[in-house]
Length: 171
Ligand SMILES: [Zn+2]
Image 1 (tube, rainbow, N blue to C red):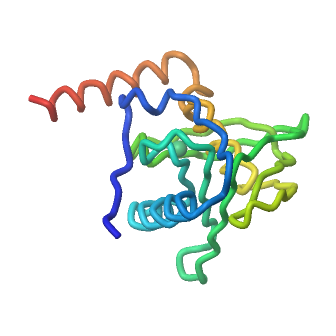
Image 2: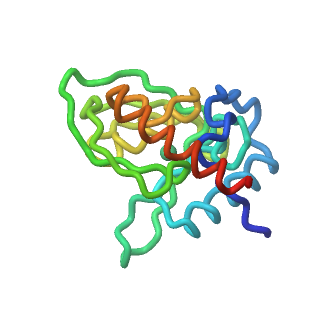
């Protein structure tokens, strides 16, 4: 299995709204394998399919600590059904915005419904880092990046930086 590239800012596909998965079939399971491979190789703790250029509502996560056993999680067509009033702030980064980290405030707790790899509906209540990661990845499915939650000044600065880098690479 060839390792697939993760697309980075300013790739316009990152702004695409991903389509729901109609059926969890062999094609989706292969995509999930490719997502885990790319995510672990990066290395990262979360990935949305659009980061491989696939506009499908699929998210992979693994929040296991470095020396612990792998704990892969898959969310197909994830949907936030409830968010807490209480907010929390975590430092976020993104494999599509390499080496940029910033604190983001989001609801501290959420409820999510999704399909698992067998296509079965599941519910999950999440807090802490899991809640943050799920909201970050579900944002990706809607063409939203974590820098959209920052001030315009900070966002413009990072967008400019990556646009410049892309221009230099193309020269
Ligand atoms: Zn991301």
